[in-house]
Image (cartoon, rainbow, N blue to C red):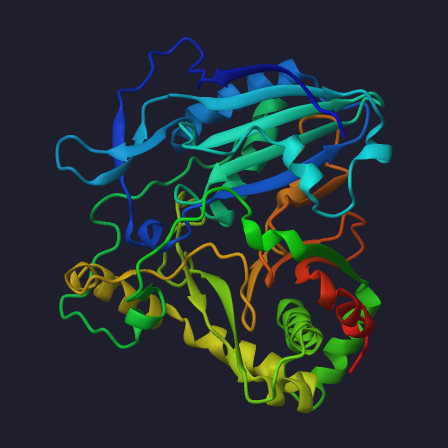
Length: 433
C-alpha cells in the first residue's frame, strides 16, 4: 500500500473568540505513574461518503478546547519539579494522506505492518500527546489512524474524548467536561493500611527498560490472527461453563478463559508451567470517582493457573479463576494501592512500574478489552465507522477484544502468536470444549 503524505499541521484548541486560558500544570497521578509508557493506537474506517477534512479539523479544534490535555504536552512543573501534563495548547498533530486505490482492495482486515502507514511517524521522541492521520482512498473511503499517549489517558477516558469529538464535529453538545487530577484527589486513609502485595503487582524490583515504538526484533516471527466469535458460539460456551452456577459468567470472562486455554494449548507448554493473565480493572466506580475522570484510573488483576489445570480441567475452571481474581481487585484493593503509592515506599525501595512493553509474553497473557467502550459511537455526521480495530502491535500474547463491526453481538479477538503456533491455535480456537 503506497501512502502519499499531503500535509502535516498542528491543530490547536478553538475558543470561539474567547481568550485562551492560561497554561496549567496537572500533576501526574499515582495511576499515571504506574501505567504503560506507550502510544495507544487504533484505526477507524469510514465508508463513502466520508466526512470532510475541514469538518473533522473544525470538530477537533472545538473538542480540544474542552479536552486540553490532548492538546498539551508532558513535562515538569517549574514551581515544584513534579512530572505534569502541561495544558499549554501546543496542539494535536494532524496528517493528511491519500492512497490511489480502493480501501476494499488495500486495507487489511487484521493488524499487519501495513497499518503503520495509516499513522503519522511514531518513531523518536514525540512532542504531541495526540497524533492522527486522515488517509483518503480513491473510492472515497477514509481511514483515521489515531494515537494518544497512554500516560495521559486510559481507554475509558480516550473513548469519552472520541465520542465528544464526533459530537463537536456535528455541532452537538459534547457532554460533561473532563475531570482532571489534582494533588488531593487520591489521598491515603488517616490510618493507611497496605493490605495487598503492591510491591510485586503494580511495581517490581527490576528496572524498567523502555521499548521504543511498537515492535522490535522479536516481531519478525509473530503474526496477528483475528478470531471471530459469533454470538451463538459465545452463548454456547457460556452456557456450558455456567451450568450449575447461580449467575452466568460474563461475556468477557468466558471469552478470555477460552482464549487463555487456546493459547496455552497452541504454545505447547509443559503441564507444570504457570501462566498468568494481566488484565486491567477500572477504578472509577470502585473509588467513587466520576465517569468523566480524564486520566488513568486502572490497576490490574492477575489470574494464575498451571498449564495442567488449564488444559485438563473444564473451561469453567479457567473462567472461575478469572472471576475470582477480578473480584479481589475491589474498592478496598484500590484504596490499599493509594495508601502504598502515596507512602513514598516505592521510591525509597527503588521499585519500578511493572507495566512494561515486551515483545514476548509467553507463557503469560495480557488482555485489553474494549467490549464496553463506545468506540463505534464516533460519528462525524456521516454515520458510525464501518470498521474499527487496534493498530499493528506484535507482542506475542497481547490480546485485544473488540465488538465486531457486524454489530450483532459477536466479538473479534486480535491475537498475536508465533507463526509456528498459528495452525495449532486455529485448530482449537472454535472448539466448544
